[in-house]
Length: 548
Image (tube, rainbow, N blue to C red):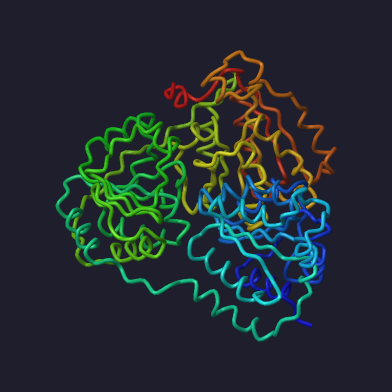
């Protein structure tokens, strides 16, 4: 018998999802039984739902789509913060929520995990209010509702939320719908007709500008535009900068790369170049306080063409309906237009800072930044926690073909440890490097057991400066609320199930020790690794100090 659960799982498999994460609960067990019977999909149970949502986000950033399973009420609301982060940063994560039976909901019975007002629609309404794509499977709409949610997710690159009542997990459907899945996925891409007036205006501005610069945003990657944009840049030799949200989307080693821009805390060479530009073409950025150095960017409406899925703004004028279709169509048409003739010439002022020899002196964050830049290899995935790691590492040049994961807008503390595990799960062949503070990792540390159980092998660099350093710099330098418990990470590994063969630990206090450890970690096929970096209590990167 072919069921609605089988159909939903077949869609996930077609979208290259091979691992489904989440937490079991009695309202989703019928669905999980179908997953358990699969040989092409694997259930990966998490330690809590919030971590599962973070992990699914990292998986989707690496794979293009992901799924997690939670239970009604307590489970889905626990995952809500993670799913909201996916919504804020356009990451297509599907949450499948097992809910009470349809008769239970219709008769408003007071069952566990529900609220005393006996209204079962509250959680769906919460997700709708947050802008998340929502759906509710019934006997009469099962195929239609799944198709609608999946297509909307693929069109917008936003997360989806799908309620599956426990009594409908075994709902029989016609297997003919399985054969139509390729057509369903293909149908999520609407025919694109670029707005020609806007296209001509952009081409004219590019051709007449003396010093144009492209600003690359994360939506270029989300909407699979990186190849066409990079060809456009190299063909016309157009200089570009990326942001901390979009590092590595376009190869940072081509001559047209100027650097990573963060307003007035950017590298001085990058700042100077941006100040001299007379036209800014911004493709898909999220211009938050974090990506603009506290809104200190040099560009303004009058000299900026902004193309995003939410907004199309031509030199201060709102143009055309802002939606993913117009965003994608405009960028593709621009990059393939024969009317662009500007040749800016190579402009590569960015130089890799040579790594000084490691000395037996206390480790600093600035030395760690330089050392990590020389350590990252082509093809690595670098996951960077919001905080001192983000500001310390954003100027590091990536060697090429890298995936760079951070949460520059939602900025949920603790997000990156599960996200790094999700990226590891999505592609076990790529090395995953995580840079995170000891305060941040405390929020999701229990997923270390998940990593060990599932034989994941990230390299985890924990910046241990005895508290929330980014908060100390902002406010409360000596305040107790910025202190965190001090852990013995080495003993955590066996406590969570690791052995000497499956995990390793390094305690680093000096520059020389860091260089020695990085040399040991350079060969491939390292086991799961924790490197505890002992830093000065109130120390942080020289770049982050500029914020104050």
